[in-house]
Image 1 (cartoon, rainbow over the protein chains, first blue to last red):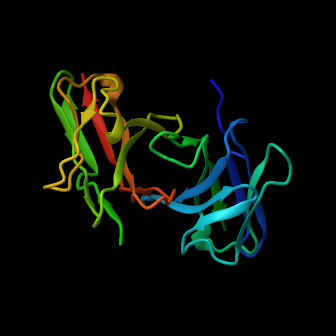
Image 2: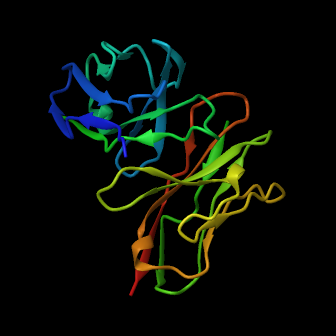
Length: 116
Length: 110
């Protein structure tokens, strides 16, 4: 069964550095998402992406964050200048369609980002 | 604001006992509700959605609009049901952002 893959599984970075988290969505899926989960807290929506543009974003997704689909397979999340509070598990997800009732999200295993 | 509440962080039961994982939502409209599960060292995955009214791995969940609840139930718990369970929702306004509850860890003891 096809899966969403994320790399790396764990990323350690220093405060103020830029990080890029990578995801390869399922190949026939058209909608892509990033969620994050700070340790001990809820899974929170960051952004959704469709047709090469952001379709929806949360308040968390400020100017420090950006997403890109640089080629036909990768979907990346960039954090320009990391802060300590960016430490979290970041989940990529994809869905075949935009109707979540009929096109459920498929999640990757996550990238644990640790900002020191 | 949309809110999904899972009041229990941990639910521990013995094998064969009934399970009910609670979920309450607060929306003005008719939200679409889901249960996601994360087994140890595995990815978050969809367990079931209310619109399909299905039973997956013996689990069912009924939307109760009067009580604004979507509790997950299973009559006889199995050890392999031990996992983290998340209730999630999105409003029926065409938005695709899921709002998750804080999750309940289910421990099924032998």
